[in-house]
Length: 434
Figure 1 (cartoon, helix red, strand yellow):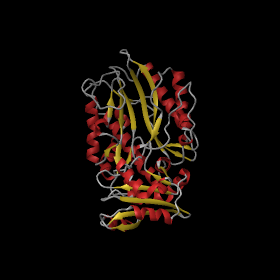
Figure 2: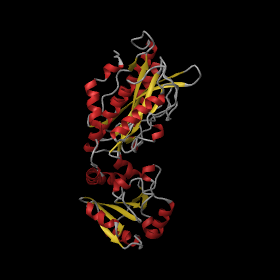
Figure 3: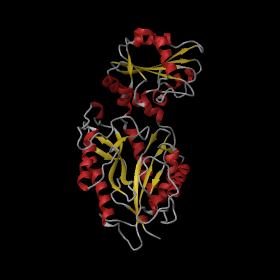
Figure 4: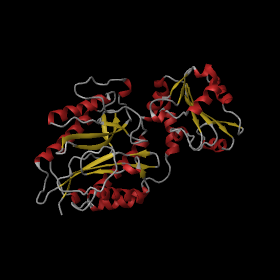
């Protein structure tokens, strides 16, 4: 595998064009149209796979449901109920809303709106709709996944009293429904995520071009990326305190960048994600190696570590296909790592990414050697799912800690397998000593 000097990896015209265009790449608000498409095309199948014929989400201001924007109640004031009924033709969305908010809801056209007077209860109207549609199994937002656990105890108590024992006996967690619905992205969403992934990877490469060994700190490198986000008007892919996570030293997991000075011989890890249109996020890691004076390539041992990480990444990539289990993807990489002499890696190979850096859907884990593979149905990969996943290699350091390469890519599951959302990192980014 050949190695190129860092600055040659980033053609000046390409970098300049991206820097000029990036503030305009994610203008406008595509979400309302995409949300409507998701309700029309993806929600019916998700409800069928979950075995429910209705779904209820309660919304309110200041402490709203995690899925408020997904179901259309992000602007709720007083308590409102948003219902989706499975019909032979698809899904009927119905909102029971206090007057005031009901006007704008009706204008949006996403739901059929039942307006109630402010200060009156919603439950009689909700029960009436459940009766009209002949609901037998009603999903409510309560479950082990945070995205599907929006009901507070106060709301659950009000729901139980408002609907009564007969209707509550027909309720169940929305966890399966929410996972089935959110884990698949539409073509329009994938295109947005593809553009965002391109920008994320490019910015990481550009940031590495600013490193001066012996001078630049991990925090300095992180601030370069923070400035790019601010200039382009995009958000953080996760907590700003840990994004980007830049680490030139020992493993620190998900953590903040420090004042550690980057030295020759360092592998530098940058784990970075951006949020575009205030909805979709990226999660990409790029790795660099700092050459010693006189070196034009990493030492053979460092080369071996990198090559193994890439081989493990590609083995996982080849294992991704519709119907595969996430544990099979994880196992494909772990076999490579074991054969190449890596320490066991505590982290799974990958996770869903999209609305959150750690989105809902199958995890690419559970394939540890010596254990039975996790083959539960909810671990199967499906067409349109998007993942961030790592290529690993881990080794011990002299102080009994570890260092792990975890080059992270983003993919979408297609009919024929997996497809990278941005070109993967095949070669280490090399930083010359100065």
